Image 1 (spheres, rainbow, N blue to C red):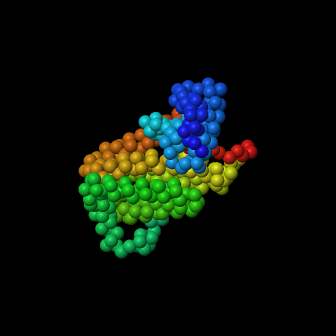
Image 2: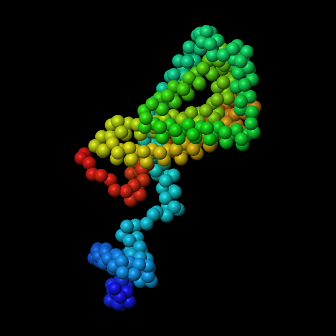
Length: 331
């Protein structure tokens, strides 16, 4: 094949394709023409490459076809447009979806923790079985408070943040098993209840609440939200509704995994409070008030901003173009 002859014969068609590809707006007829000329140019490119491999003509055609493809296939969104939409619509909408289940997980945790606390408060044998008396006394009198000042504020913040963020991420990711989240709820509640029982036994219950409340209000609620997201992902394949199980998992998984971003931010805030506020010798109401304000901010995003995002049609999932084609199902 004579590539020069091909280029001369097809030049008007390729020039028209380039004009359409660069044109800002296309009418319906022009859009149809763009696709038709794109297909014709693709055939010319295949013929040119078969005849001579890489050549200036083939290179020009490849660039022209790529430009034309972008006109009807679209491009990735501008990050400057995606980020505001992600944090103002997608993340709050995902948080809003789990608002009631988050409260249910919180209630279950507090119930189990309360039962362990009551068990320990009414049974000296229970306390005695946890550890030797000298170790329990040291925990109540020294170790519980000393834990919060063992490291510098920055180092302690990093330590607790990475640990809690990892637990939250696991709860969301492994929630699909249906086992990890209940295990996490019971384990977390056991630790809270048994520690409260020990502090109660040695008349240090006021210290327990004074030191756990400032950071614990937001920290624990973030863990509850993570558990709720994991349970919803599990429920997506148990009861997918009119969707296929694969489609339900894909949609709910994409939407609810975005919660991890919000939890990482929330747990960073609680880590800063734990690292720099909890250890301070301030009145308990000042420290707890700081923690309550942090929790109020998180709830404002989940219930207020999230409700607005849902009313605007956000679900937490990707946009239709980014998510790709979906299989049609009966419904």
